[in-house]
Length: 127
Image (cartoon, one colour):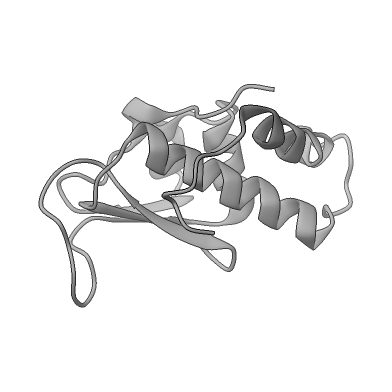
């Protein structure tokens, strides 16, 4: 899903609510892959909308990546500012369940580059 498309806030909340029990630990089963992908992609697109730009790439494999944050535009090779994490950690960050500093300190987020700290724009959704 391209980051340039606007995100319907209700669609985002619905997508994240569908995986909330898993995030809270009240449902031990992994969520449906389509539900998880939707929650990750919509929340990534929301980050790109609230922090427009091309200086940081936020990656949540295998579901998506967006470029965000104002600054020098990156066009070739590996970007100088990269944030990468797993879907669960991303959704915990995106919903405010996990503070950025804690995620970085615990090694749940790989953040490289001077602009890679996206904590200023988190959380992107509250449910």
